[in-house]
Amino acid sequence: MKFRLLKSAFSVSIIAIAAPILANSQAFAQTPSFFCGAAGGRPATIAVQQGKNIPVILWVADNYFNESGEDAITRCTRVSGILNNSQGQGSWDNIVTAGASASGQLIICAANPQDGSCRLLYQVPKGQNPEQARQELLRRVKNPNVSVSPVKVN
Image 1 (cartoon, rainbow, N blue to C red):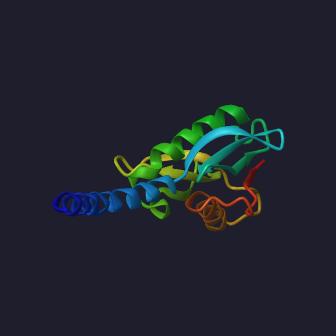
Image 2: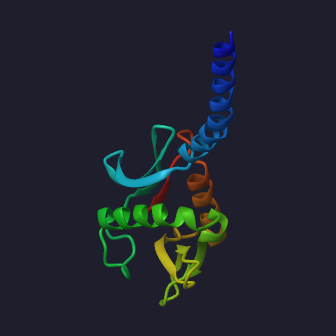
């Protein structure tokens, strides 16, 4: 009888310790990771969340931003890495910013909180407000969703 009581108390203790750990691991599982893959035959920055691959940015043009000198696959790979490295540095609202390049081109970038630098993600699509472009990307990286089409970078 004492053994059963001891066994039950031990089981309850294990559950009490494990429950918060499991709850926190589920929160981490919901944080997306990013990689460069393909969607619709084009390079795409893809978020992996809860086992689903969700395109976030579709890289349509091969050399969309002359100043970068990079093709779509190279930019896709770099941006995916920037997004992965940025997510642990604070709120997405403080990381994803709109700015201007040295030549005055409107761009979306990822702020580096350590040195204040702006890591180029992509050029704001022609005719679009930079803050609107920023908000569209934020909506996709904060909560990747298959029902929301990716940002298309021409």
